[in-house]
Length: 450
Image 1 (cartoon, rainbow, N blue to C red):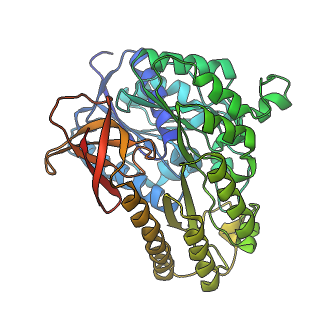
Image 2 (image 1 turned 90 degrees about the vertical axis):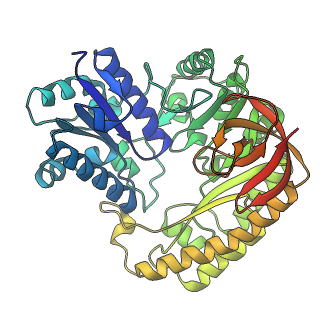
Image 3 (image 1 turned 45 degrees about the vertical axis):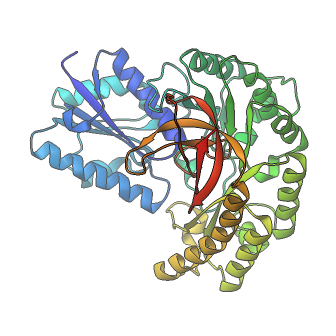
């Protein structure tokens, strides 16, 4: 089996990346040889995303491209895993003849058997119950050695009307407290310095365990309790929290973020909108005033925090006046980090059946309007950083810019900006250095190592 080479194309969110790392370990444990370039593989795996239309299109394009390699004899078999595999079981085999194997998320633990079957000439699909998706075990880390994603739960119970995640991934399932701590300690032992906490809703962590009588947290807020314990792990320098649901951000959590030095003063809160009617139609709570109160309270409790959010335009029935309200809200809230996407009608979701959709052209126009508004906040924030000395985690060297680069405490990998800087002394990836900010370029900061 050592002669069989397996490569993977990992797509989608950090939670999907956690799945990919577990899948790769299963394959390595079974004796397969892992290769970085799928063009060098005997069997290519596409770990797909199926959340919104653009993600599905990206996944399909990757499968088609691998099909070309297969037709040229460069690879022998293609296996599809992840959300697209779970969501479109019959359609993939029926419409994509180049695919040899499909592994639903509940069968991720059987990936080695699926690969073995397709390499023996079979056309195989395997599925299991969603709750059987492995959440723990050995990992082949695919991020740079100095940071790792730490998934604390899977699935979702929020039932936002536009979202297919509950139907794809199932209900919310927290990982056991001690299991998460143990994994974090293992990662720290490997040299990981930054932990990035992920789940579909990190702030719900542990609620299901408590309800089932399987967890008695030392604090009322289970995420706060978990973060407090993670901060005790030697070797971990930064802890970053993503995907916080606004309704569950309380003073206990904010106090831990404010008072624990290892926790980055950064919080990701996908708000989606500010208009009360739109939020209600999304099956979410709040309105412009309540969300502004939350944002202001977070800033008062955690001075210097950077707040990231995502918003959606083009939800069915959204008016131009409501887009104007959203822009005014963004102007008032002054989000340091914000992304905007256009509503994608997903089958099997309540919002997918709603009337009042806008054209693609209008959706893109509204998206551009929102991002133009956000750019003003980013400009002001970047300007305010000039002259400051900040800590940066080193990520590499950009030959084109002839500068080193890294991230500040206020920047998550892949989605936020970079800090580019010059240095007269050597350093390695994962080092923490002090950089004096001297200028900015769009969303990025420029500086000199102190």
